[in-house]
Length: 103
Length: 405
Image (cartoon, rainbow over the protein chains, first blue to last red):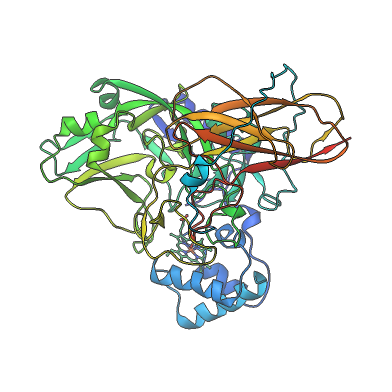
C-alpha cells in the first residue's frame, strides 16, 4: 500500500497529477525514521501490534509516562479502537513502553 | 484559578496607550526551526506532496505542522498549510468524473453533486477564515496530556470559496424534525473497529450562518489533496475538527449524533472557561466549538540577538472565534505595561489580523516580548494557562525570549 519513492519519484508523480487536471493522485511517503521505536525487550511485539493503524511516531511523540499512563493507552487502543492485542502481548507492550518511554 | 472564567478575565483587561509608529525596518529573519523549543526539538522537516517543508508530527496518517515563520502575514500559503488526518488510509486519488458529494437522510430530494454542480448550481461565496486544530499547542500543557503533541503551527488562514452549506441543504429540502447534519470524508479506516471520522453540526446553526461553506477553492487555487481536495467544509470561527476534508457525504438526521469523534472525542468541560483544575476530570462535557482569542509573534524568531538602541519590527498575527480582533498589545517589561500594536488590513472577522510594533531594545541582556489580543466582545488572553484533559482551547499570553547586545 505504501510506496517508496525518492525525491525524483515524488516530483514525477506531482508533475503527472498537474498534467491530468481533472484527476489528482498523490504518493504517500513512507513512515519517517523518527518514528522508530527504541530498542529493548518487547520492542518487536510493540512494533508488530502498534503499527497497523498508525505510524509509531504516535507513540514516540507522547510525554514520557509510567506504566499507568501506558496501560491506559494500550487499553484504549484495544477497547475503543479494537486493536487485536492479547493480554500477554498487552502486558509486554506496557512494560516496554514504561521502560523505554518512562519518566 | 480553575473557576476563573476566561471571559471575565478578559473584561478586566486594562488598556495602556502609547501607540508607537511602526518603522519600515524589517526585523532580523531566520528560517530555521526553533531548536530550543522543547516541543519541536528533534522533529524533522518533511516535504509531502503539494507541500513545502513542514514539521513532522506523524507520518501515517499524516500530521504536519506549519513553521512559525509563516505567521508573519495574514494569509498562509497552501503549500505551508498544516495537515491533520485522524484515520488511515487517507485518500490519495480523486477522479472528478466519479467524485460526488451526496446529500442524504431526512431530505425531500437527495442530491449527488459533482464539483461542476457545486460551482454552477449554487451562488459562489467567499470567506477568509482561520482553520485551527482543537489541539494546537497541546505539547505546551502542564501537566502534559496525551494526544498530538503540536507546537503552535496547527493553524492557518486562507480565503475559501465555495457553495453555502445552507443553499445546498435548502436545495435538498430539509424535512421537518431534522436536528443535525453529519459530515463524512473519503478517509476510511482500514480496521472496521476504528470509528470513521464523522462530525456533526446543528441544522439550526447551519441555516442561520451564511459563512459555512463547502469550499472548493483555497487562496485562489484548488485545495491540496492533504487539505481536503476536491471540497471541504469550512466552519468559520470554530475549530478545524468540524472542517471535514475530502468531503463525500452530508446526511441529515433527526437526532444528536454521538459517535466517537463527537463523543467522547473532541469534548471540553461544560463551563464558561472550558477548563478544570490541572490534573482533574470534568463532571460534564460539551462538543468543542468556538475558538478562543490568540496572538503570536512570528518575527523576530526566539533567541535572535539584537543590538542595543536599534529599532526592530515585531510582527505576527492575532485571531479569535469570529467576533474580530479589536486590539493587539505588546509588552517588553514582563507584562507591567502594554502598548498597542498597529493592525494590518481587516480581511474580515474570521481572519488572521496582522499586527506590527516597533521596539527599541534599551539595555543589554535577555529580553522577553509578550503579546495579547482583545476581540470585539472583550475576550482576551490570560497570564496563566487554563487546563483541560484533552489539551484544547489553549490561549495563554504568548512570549518570545531574545538576546540584546
